[in-house]
Length: 183
Image 1 (cartoon, helix red, strand yellow):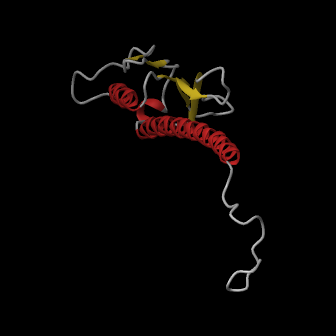
Image 2 (tube, helix red, strand yellow):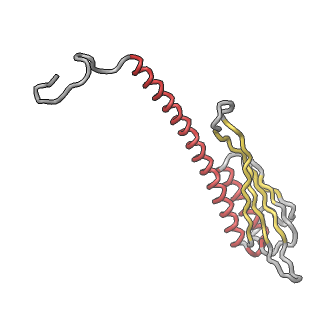
Image 3 (cartoon, rainbow, N blue to C red):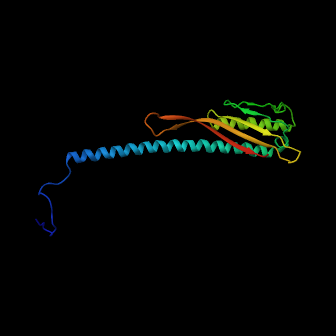
């Protein structure tokens, strides 16, 4: 059969379009594909949130490391491990009795270090939820081999991560970030 513009038309006359079964199969295939895309979006969002939190933790630890380098009068001359603990509430405790809040002026190097630790702990708790931190130092050695003081900044927190299987929707994961510093 030829049309008026000399093109060939195949098939039965009047049989055009899709059957109901074909449309239903296409909808099912599309639905499964869209569900897969939605799950991938949830995983991507979870990964982005996790990366943001880890980046903030790295920046906060680097901030304290920079402050420790600026306060070399205390940190480079530690004689014993101050064992600084930062609680989730932002409180600072230390085994070094010299690390005390500033009550007089001019400030001593340990008072400056304590004030910097307190400010850092408050900022850390504003930026991250339920984070615990610690600062441990190894004193400098004067005997051979001569080693400068070195400190370790550790941050610990728990993240909720979306998992890709059907049994669980979130998975709590303990995260530990450690930074080594030579003040």
